[in-house]
Length: 442
Image (cartoon, rainbow, N blue to C red; front, side, top):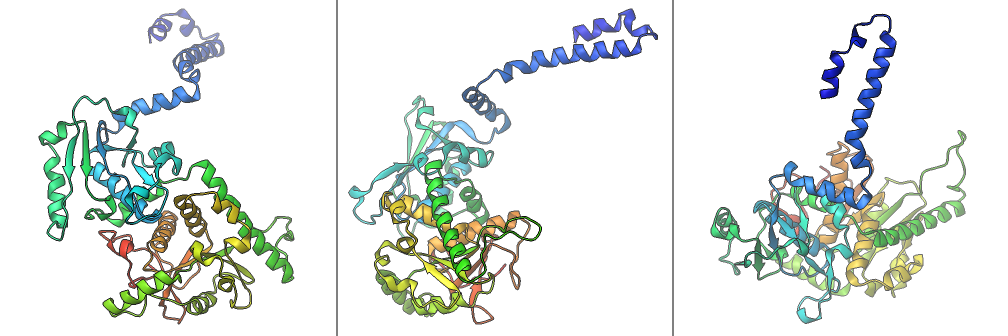
């Protein structure tokens, strides 16, 4: 600024014979000043840039406190139950205006043998930095190394039993705000798995958390391999049917990738026993579906031209049953992991990673068909609905808008499977966590 003020007193500015030179000199001086201001930042390497932007975040986001933390128990059970538990922990931390200490997930699937659980760090499955970048300003994950241990953790015992209602639980959380507990650097919630905590948050908040979950590159690579194998199978099927997909169009451009259908097939013996009892208790006949029912419903979907590959996301126990890929209608070529030749990709992974790969394969399918009483299917449809909402599409009734989803256990108006979008206005995740046959296309 002093330089510019001194320039005002120079006779140079009052000499009409040299206006071009004056302007040029002024531009050069301004550029020198800008370089002096900007150059220190250009010299910062990538790791330093990351620290710089991280360090400025508190000023931009005073709501998300970086010096106060919430700690939760190890997150357990199936992949999607763990995702719900993680999101619930994030939203609880947001409510308390705290960062969530990165929780431990469970790589294995055990419901009762807690001592057999294999803990796995969150950042071994999901990208820690991308999560914080995508959820910037909404929630924040923190590393344990950020805790200074200036104060003893405040231990909060979650209530249990039927008397511990959602209202009592919310009241407990509200009492923490502004109390002596709020002075503690860490509030540690002890007791039951966060999946079992009472739910206080709307579906759209959960959807935002799930949208921030990005697989680490090592797992993403495996997802891409499986999807490539599925599309290659579709290309072969079309080539054999005389409609080679690899041919160029008349304008010289190549066709887009071969589309595929993903079906989350719940026909395992233990599932069928469980869902039959469920139907008896609820007096509903739209929970269980046999293999034949599923094939019939899927064959009535007309979103994609045939032949088309149908990828079957099934439990490992069904991979030895060759019959699950037989009996499909003409033009529907069914594949599961073994027939597709990708069992090696899955076999070297623990349960949690296997499920994460299958989830992404289903979520990215051109058409998805699942069971509305399955948490896996519900979260796949939630993911796809969120993407449609982001594209400005809040209704899939009567038209093919892409990313179509269907519930094969619920009959639609046309006799086929019911078109399915998540109700983003729902005030809790109850129906997604435990299932419902009340599904629609908007």
